[in-house]
Image 1: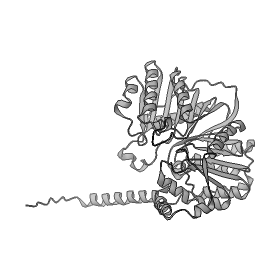
Image 2: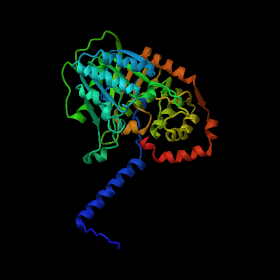
Image 3: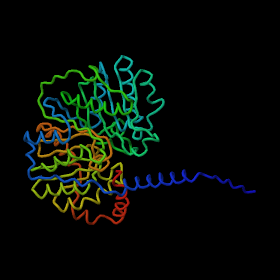
Length: 433
């Protein structure tokens, strides 16, 4: 015998539930189909030259970041260089180690990090680790237990909670390490074996980190402290975290941390747009995900029109997100027609996030050239006006370009129908990539 169970709900609850469902659906559709930001620089013709103090003052004000005048910067190319450098600094820590990471995964290099952090925690060093609740989902249980048992502390950024569901899309995409408040590391690489070693199927990822000393380290520490506060409700203060910093080397550097505002804008987006608009000679972009919105595409094409040499380096067929790559390729047309150069890196997945402008400005950090980085995630970037530093990064770019395939306008126009089909699918998800 079939029995039917009827449940009767009060009308007000049904109405409220219906309203909640409609609002949630509208919110999700707005994120997928809503308009992307359309940024324009008013009075762009009056923008000061980017080697002037006037431009520096303008940038400092608009991105709300302090200009640091001292610093020692070292470019670390690929995991065989940056992982040993980070681990060496951790093992020498005497007061504190703070790490914020979108990706902190189980594996060989993850184990080395946990062992080094646990050893320092047992020695009385304050060890704090903030990992993204989604990006590092698998980092639980036995993997982190040695660190926790040694006295280290772990925070998970923006986990699933009913009262934060509408903000669940916001992730910390920052990848940074600060040791004793005096040495920092910033770049695009997390802690995972794809950056550490190659396998039979997948070559090691190409990426860049920068080792930082000097005044900017305090700004990196403050960036870590922001999401530690959000996750743990604790304000970090004291000499263990913010010691007096003395550095004789001269440079000009800003740490720009960004998070989505009520209007959907971020300081990272303002930084990139200002630097692109200021270019008079060259723009070099290396990014794993190249999905510029209309206003950024307009900025790049405008740069080409005024005689700027624009080149973009992105992943080739070894991209870790083939749908994103396909969508990205679909947008090459306007750039190629304008006269910009687009290259696809062949040996492996290229994950470095580097912008160089006019051979004097360089930006290294966690921001991709897409809407998720510019409008949704928490990000952090180091912007430097220093010709020697920029030259060092451009040397890596030149080496990468020698292993890349240039995409011609003719090739792009004759790309296969199968690729065009996936571009249409990717368009729907473009805002989330």
